[in-house]
Image (cartoon, rainbow, N blue to C red; front, side):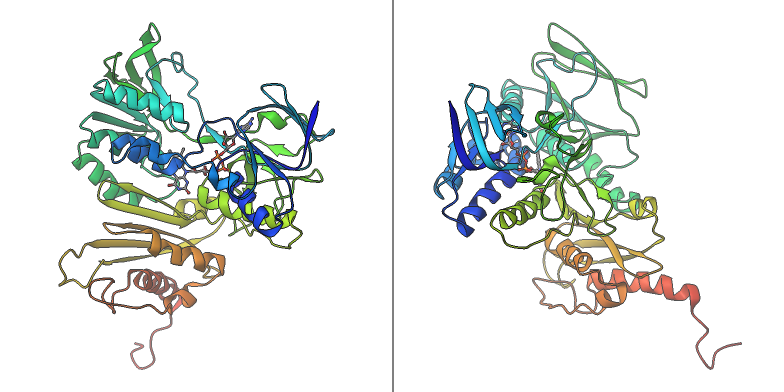
Length: 461
Ligand SMILES: Cc1cc2nc3c(=O)[nH]c(=O)nc-3n(C[C@H](O)[C@H](O)[C@H](O)COP(=O)(O)OP(=O)(O)OC[C@H]3O[C@@H](n4cnc5c(N)ncnc54)[C@H](O)[C@@H]3O)c2cc1C
């Protein structure tokens, strides 16, 4: 027997939830069924802090009422296969669901290492409830050492969590710096210092070459520089945080346009098939800056994409202008945020970047608790358009970088941003004459203008 629904949503993460809630608000009469396999949707961003022991791990579970209270039918089942031509999905228990409109929000899964013993009991990736509970089990069993592979935001947050629990932590990345997609080398340097000062053994420019183990447990991690880290196979563990790939296996050979980095959607979240939309980590999408394909597996991309999808289904015109990629993380007391292109990425994508830096204090310098704030701004030397920013501070960096994200979205130039009007107060802000973002703009403008400035009248020799 076939059950029918008007709108079928596959996936119960931020994209699925946001889509359901907004569509129900706009069109309460639409019947929506959401399929998701896990017992609880989760606040993934908070998993590192649950592992650190800051709160009861159950606090990361989202309530089903987020969707059931607005009238969505939630079915806890994994979709085993779809037939998009017949507009049907079949769940693992054999239920067939027919739909008029399909919203795909299957997200992304961690990239698994292609190494022998990668499936051992003490080798993890971080995404699911099982991952979180498995790592917690090792920590509670008395783990003393962890090897974290991948020094992106998820890897850094794992490394910090385990170090805060007094483990010996080795953090490995093939890049020459941590957070390589967020920070250029100059901005990553203070993060390296903090990680090392806190006792993390940072191994950059290398990879894991072998996981030695037996009986389903790894006891040694061999690195490409010829060194090795020994583990107690009973309690110590390895955690890979080496990227995410879109969870799209279900949709191969269905006539759906799919690339390696995700389902292809337009700016209204429509796929190439009528009545089939997608949003979030399962999608391939483009940069808001240059319109070319760009990775962006972030909740802050998934949510606005899902809102556009809900409006499209509700018949409201809206468009998503692309990934800006405002992102943030913490390395102990350092707060790190970035948006748009780094200097390195701007160059890779064909721009001639000019950069400016601002280095100031979070509060008026005489105020207790005032601390360092470093700002880096990246712009295109030809058009003077702002392309990206990076902040490393000891206070929240997200509010500071969000101003740059807005500048990117509004396609502002350095000249526009240098005139940005701000507020100041001794406890709460930079000194009025030392706003870090304005200072970074002015330093970039100085570089540009000094390149082609004529000597001032009267002092020409
Ligand atoms: C540890 C960690 C920390 C993070 N920190 C941040 C952060 O600080 N800031 C930020 O912006 N982003 C962060 N992210 C990324 C963010 O969580 C994702 O970008 C976001 O969850 C994507 O939402 P989504 O709804 O597209 O996909 P997902 O959240 O991945 O949800 C996908 C859903 O689809 C379901 N699904 C998959 N296949 C099937 C199937 N066959 N049948 C039925 N259901 C299926 C899944 O079970 C899940 O419910 C973090 C991610 C992790 C793992």
